[in-house]
Length: 160
Image (cartoon, rainbow, N blue to C red; front, side):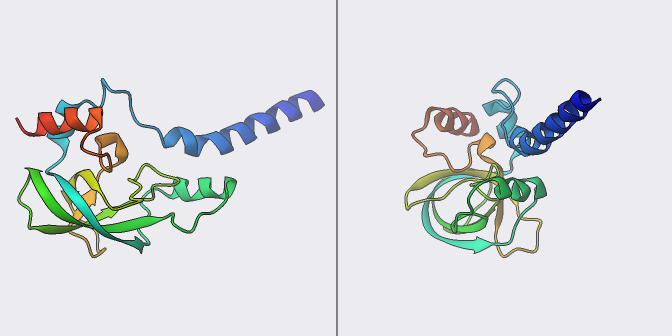
C-alpha cells in the first residue's frame, strides 16, 4: 500500500509540474502551417519596435502558475508594444500600432527584448486593454525576426 501511495504522489507531482509546460507548446507544423495562419489572422505586419510597457494582460492563468517553479524575472508578464509599421501584410493599419501580447517568459507570447524588426500577426483587440491589436502567439510567428525561415514562409503566404 505504501508503494502505491508513493507512486500516486509521484504521478501527481509530475502532472502538476508538467501540465503548464505541455500547455505551452506549439502544435506541429502540419497543424499550424502558413496557409492556416493566413486564414486565422486578420492583421499581419512587419514593424520596428519603438517601445514596450508592462501590462496585466494574462489570458492563460496556467502560465502564471508555472512561474512559481522558476525564478521570477522583472521583465516578464504581459506587454503592450508600440511599433512603427514597415510593411503591411494583411489588414488596414496606421503608421504606428500598439500590440497587446501575453507573457513571453512563461507563456507563448512574443518576447520583445530589444529594438528591431518583428513579424506581428493577430486580430483587432477585443479586450479593454489600450492596444490596437491582440497578438497571436509565437506559434503563429509573432515576435520572429522577418529573416527567420518560418517567418519568411508566413510572410510569403500572407503576401499571396
